[in-house]
Length: 349
Image 1 (cartoon, rainbow, N blue to C red):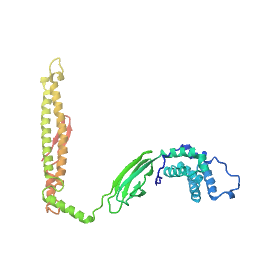
Image 2: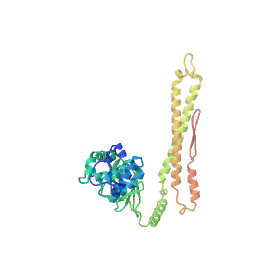
Image 3: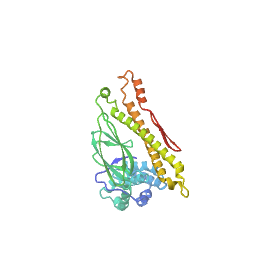
Image 4: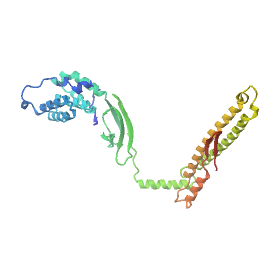
């Protein structure tokens, strides 16, 4: 897939696929009866390319039409057949640029005979294309779509792009690269603005400053990445959730005992009719125990991570390894498991 910048004022493009794929209207004129030696080199190439296209050899015909168009840049016929071959191969951008150029050419007998066909072709091709308008900074940054270069900032005109999803990349030395997914829609113009952030002038100094800042933060008691108040809060939430779990399990067991007691057996009535409230209360307590047990596990995990991140760096604490072990021991992850009777959680602090 090649990407080209659209011509100013280019109309929307699109064609009847059959028109350009077989192109009966584009090769309807009869061949000259004169011997081949009377044909120009460009005309000979066009005739050869048409024969290849009739036999389905589009890729083999393409270089012949390209050579013919290069030999006679003003030949509308050569460019029309080149556009037809690009369209047949799915090269929508190339076909679009050629058809736009041909249709905007001055009066030409060949063009006028086939104008209706070419306009339908342009309409069909256009349904496979959208446009990208990109603005931003810094100037001179390279713009790529899926690894193919579109140009450098600033891009003055919209770029015609086949419909689909792409990865936009904007690159320049001395700046952080920008990568962004894009989706090009049929007939639409996608407008994007970009701005690259410059890299630090001295990356080594920036790293050193960052380390110094980290040491200052640690010495100030902020935990070197996790504030102490957060660690204590998570620890407290862990303890509260664990206590709630234990109380809920005790309540659940009490209601289960009442449900299973002889008091809930009465002649002519079911156990549910007699002690339905006990069953409901037991299920509620069981649900609370389960939820609080899960919460205990989550809070404990968060507290453990928070305490670990809050430890000072090894270079500032001779006993950093021991301190880290102590931090890990401050909160042991609470373990919860489901049993036939409910949820069971255990933990230590």
